Length: 331
Image (tube, rainbow, N blue to C red; front, top):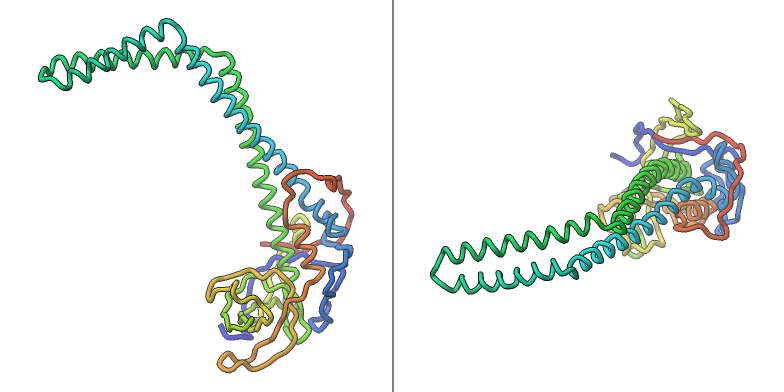
């Protein structure tokens, strides 16, 4: 596709009615290099500072994650307990006179079979093998009986089965909540994308792009910029608005990059703020916009809310829901 042409695309986006660094125009000045702690107004249930938005967005996912982690530890401990109980039951069976007598008979039968295999009498080999197998099965049955009748092992296995069932249910709940959470995160990243028309001063995320490494810290990408003035077919679903917009493809030269992190033709996600500093002609590549990384409030927000905490900490606390604007979200 040629740079500058348009295509229709359905995007995810969260409408920021009150945002710390509003971008009503693509020519607005770039965001501050040192992110502050602004108040975000994303929708009716995501509102406040980055930490407050994190608590609102992640509360349910972290709740299930922490329960999942605890149950995984319980399951691991119960499996070890069941294994220990089983080993104890087997050892107890092996300590009985009946088992010891059968084990001695088995050892003698095994020795007889080894000697029979050295001779030329097939009937002797057959009889020795049959007796050995019969005694082996008898020993195994003694151990199985001991396992089946052991009260400690039965209790451990019952507790293990219950914990594994709980873990499966919690994992399913976590996966469902995590799917919606990822949907919201994708929508936020789409919201923060650099909008069309791209010009000097434009700022925003670039999302998924396929890089062409120029060298010396320069990477060339084709970027589809959403033209929000063309937004249509907007549908609000649970604080998420689905919409269709026209996209304008432009070519952007990223400078000051660690180009060793990129491989030609291998798609990467650049969910970080870039600011357009210049426009120039790049030989066979034609007109390109020159952009550089610039830390922003949006970067800080995503860095705070994206990771899930693996366990509760002192900062974990209930966060009240505050009303706000409706976010534009995702399909």
